[in-house]
Length: 83
Image (cartoon, rainbow, N blue to C red; front, side):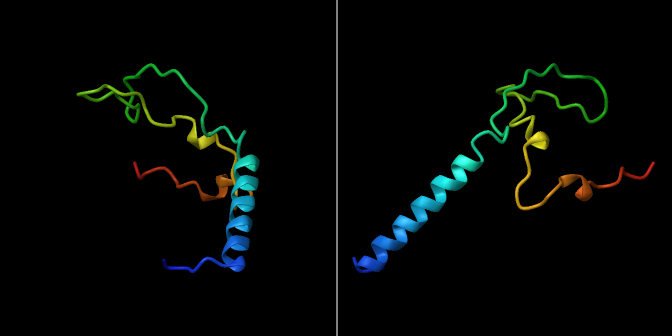
């Protein structure tokens, strides 16, 4: 065993589980699991379903997820590509 069983180990596990539960509860309604229907468009940049599975886009609403660790993600947006 890497760490011997001890009270310190048990206490550390308790703290870790408590912290993890708190973070999961805090983020439970952050919008990261929002479902969205999608109709592929024909404009440049529109996501296209790809073979062989033609699976929908993964987490299409990820850009709308409530931020954490930073106040607002807008200040990190990239400028458009050069014309």
